[in-house]
Image (cartoon, rainbow, N blue to C red; front, top):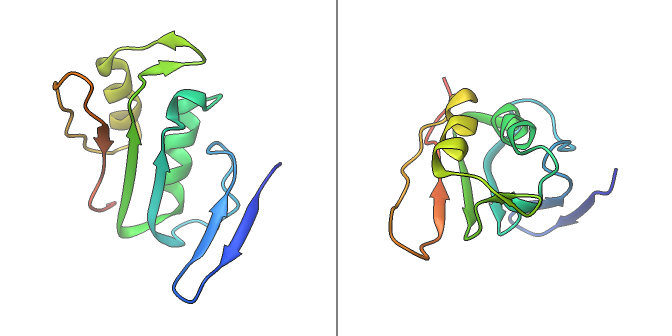
Length: 108
């Protein structure tokens, strides 16, 4: 599994496949992904991993301008179902060309 870790004065930054995060359960307050969701081999598993590693009250932010899975378009409803099945709430925008932000303010 490819992973990379970088330590700064304020954070530890990991780069790893979304489906296999190298982190303990309930171990982070913030998980982010930018312009990579459409490349994930298993989008539902990647979202479940983000939920797994978030502490209660944690935040997951995903931004992507391309709603697809391996080059095949998927609908906003399909993306919403992936997130809702993982227990996340999603504000979706209908603005053309807008960045899709998906987040959850806490985990119960």
